[in-house]
Image 1 (cartoon, rainbow, N blue to C red):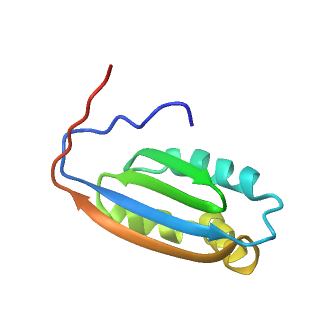
Image 2 (cartoon, helix red, strand yellow):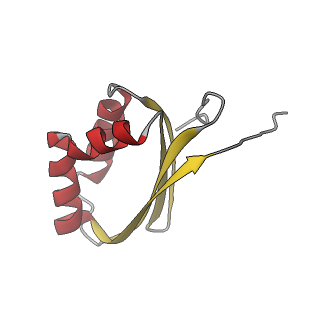
Length: 108
């Protein structure tokens, strides 16, 4: 990604997905790009920030409501990607959902 997400004024929700990659990452980049594009079309999606280095990835997606998060989790193609991730792409992952109460930033 080339830029950070621009989110609305809080409150909103952040889904923090942290993972360690397995040795089988074939097709992972394509699937991750597809999930980002698909999530962007879901009602309630606000944006995503992602970084990967040395086998560790952190992706934070932003959502208007918890209902929007649940809907994304239940999406059929996302479910298939999650199952593939467990079977092939990840050694471990942790997912955390947080309500964003305040935010601030800085730009040059």
